[in-house]
Image (cartoon, rainbow, N blue to C red; front, side, top):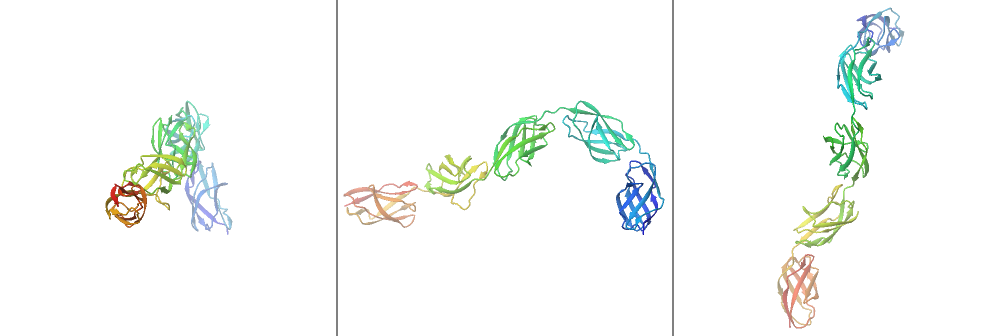
Length: 418
């Protein structure tokens, strides 16, 4: 059965549309359309079987209100009268000026602005993005000089207000500092250039950076994350988009091994560091102490001079991609105290050799040679304080015994061959 419409309230409204009305009747459940004449209403809400609310479309004169449901369309004569819309009036533009390139968002304040269909900046239409009875938001077209802005609604054309186009030069960028950084982003990059005032967007490839500071000649940003690659960086201002400069995302360095793993506390020895992503090394650390010097040999190798230190430390490499961390490799380096001989037991022996001598002292764990008068002896390390050596043959007389470790030679201790 077709719906029945008995009344509409209010029964008149602006020809611009936008009037909220209540339609009364019966059999309204399931309504699929409400028309004012032939024009469809919007925001239709079926409140109950006897009531619908809707928003009127634009129109003129007196039209019949109908409701269409599953059973058909109402046939009752329920009139709605459109009254002439009042002429629009505009009172301010915010802002009242913008770049000649256009693209500026302008808010037009006024009255009777419902149903606005056209906003002209001189002879060029703006792009309307939002309309209320008292406000229109529009994006300016390109232009020059000072032009009149007018608004057109079903009620006519508004008064005019002036809008001034200001020439803003396109930005240019000349350098990025630094020009590379970690894939995780988060580092500060300073972009130098000209005409950077009003920067609204900085892109690393297609990813926006976080802008933290802007002057006419520099923009400071926090780099977004990226993949290992080189990307174009551009700056956008009201004057347009700048030229592009390359920025390289660098993978974090990895240290697999250091060789040797031991050295003297005074430092000065050469260490070979192997790993990956080492080509852009900017620093080498032995714990918290920087290497005395370093040389990048390849993307997989760096040679460094150990600084002085004590204990066992982690050797790290720093690049624009970050600082290496302890992973599956062995990046440890141990500082060794100089070996010291305190006593020999016995301190005499046969010229034919072959006798055991206990060497007491300190820092002996990493002994790699024992000599009697410069002649190598077989030996066994018992502890950090004891080494047992077998005397080599030697001519009669007193000779110097020394223990050597990666930290260097011990003091010379006398042993007498008889």
